[in-house]
Image (tube, rainbow, N blue to C red; front, side, top):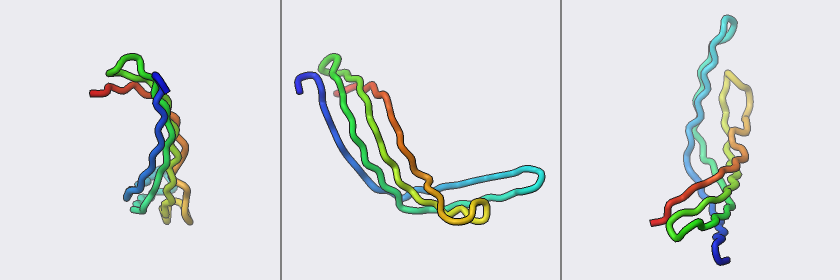
Length: 89
């Protein structure tokens, strides 16, 4: 699209989630390792042949079990929006 480049992607990985809480009434530490996945969509606008700026949206999904600090499973993923500056070599 002339100076614009659209892209999409995705992937999966193994993620470790850690939580430490400490106050006068409650001390807790919890760790969990799970498989998470993400998908992304983005666009780059080429300023020159070697440099571009852009925007990227990522949806990350990861469920973590952090008992006893937080009972049950929690959604540790989220939505991310990035402004990008890239060098292309």
